[in-house]
Image (cartoon, rainbow, N blue to C red):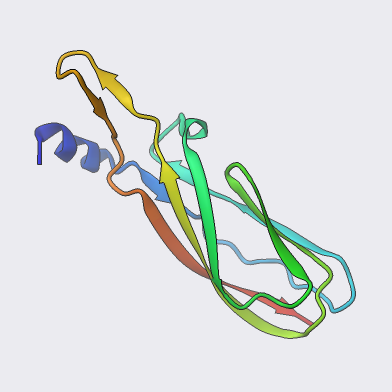
Length: 122
C-alpha cells in the first residue's frame, strides 16, 4: 500500500447510500419514491458511474428505474405488507493520470456499499 493510498483512505472517499424512510404506499394507488447515491467526501461525484442492484422483496406491481445516481421505485402496488430489500451500489470512478508516476490512479477507498430498506404497503 502506498502513502497515497493511505492518504486517500484518511479522506475516506467512498460510495454512500443515504439513510431513508421510504413513503408508505397503498394497494391500487400509484407509488413513487427514490433515493440518490453519492460519493462521500467527493465534490465531483457526478463524474462517477453508478450501478445499482436490488435484492429481496419488492411488492408486485412496483418496478425499479435508474437515472444516473438516482434509483426510483414506482408503479401500482398489488399486495400489502412490509417488504424488505437491499440496495447494492457499485461505482466506477474516473481515473486520473498521474504525470509523475505515469500511471492511472483511482482515489476511492471502496467501490461498493449496500444498505437494507423497507417499504410498507397498506
